[in-house]
Length: 112
Image 1 (tube, rainbow, N blue to C red):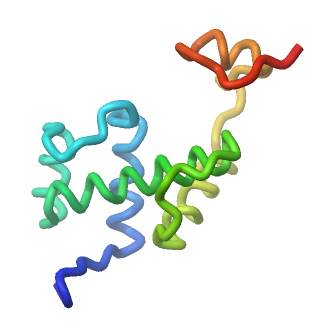
Image 2: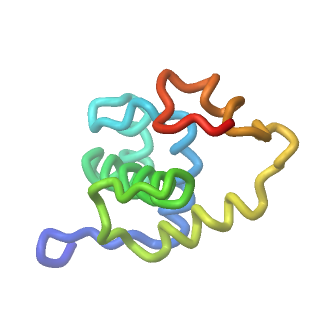
């Protein structure tokens, strides 16, 4: 590590992103899945947590047009996320805002 900064390769970020759907609503450094992945990657759990939070920020920016605090994320994070959306199987995605809102606890706006 240089200057207390850990660099992340594209391969490592892809591995972290593969974990994202499983921990999306439980991103914290004490999550056992995050701790295990950090050990496998020879990284700190806090570092994996940060990368996951950056994927969340990109997701909120793209899907909800929401700037979610973190703006200075690695450009690979956005590329990996966009690539996953472009290759996603759309047959399992809700087709209306109402379907999406129905599956969330709260929705910022209802569209009729």
